[in-house]
Image 1 (spheres, rainbow, N blue to C red):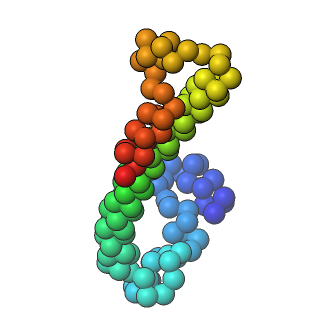
Image 2: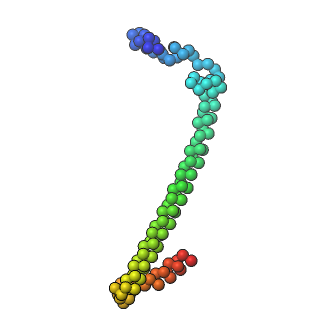
Length: 124
């Protein structure tokens, strides 16, 4: 092939070095694809792969929707846990006598009993 390319450059002729070395295409198969593969069968195979791409896109979209739903659920669980921790800390402070229930009312912080009953109502 290198010799043919050198000849092509010296003669200025347009020669396909690969075709010159490998010979012409044989009917009934495409070079490098094997026997029985034609341009038509190759085109059909490419055309059939497009719906697969669409199906893959649908699966990806469904997975993204599921992930968003799970993220929302996790955020709700975090919020609930935060409320439970706050209610527990407030209850401990009240039990220790370090916080006055009137202060909680002024701050609009629900008492531990109210917070727990509100969470139970939300979950039920």
